[in-house]
Image (cartoon, rainbow, N blue to C red; front, side, top):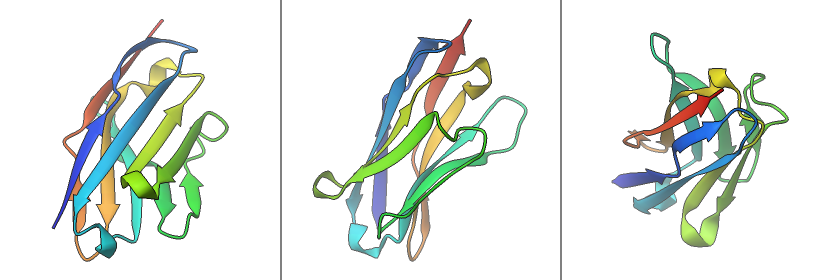
Length: 114
């Protein structure tokens, strides 16, 4: 069983930066990929970025060039560096891990203000 703990959300002005962290514990050797999703009010949850065990990454078009996903295997942690934040980036961000099962974090709120 895998548990995910997220941190790093908060309030930031448009154009600013935040870094989200997601630390996995438990049966992490079963994980194939970890990623970040987000859900804005009234919208469906969407994939923001993903990184595989081998280090391959994917980012949604809406965040390319602004967000970077990375991982520190020694710390079992995945990061989402978010730069040039826009109002439309406001959402609850969820960490996600895919292995024998799919695991979700509790979510962390990112609010971008004008």
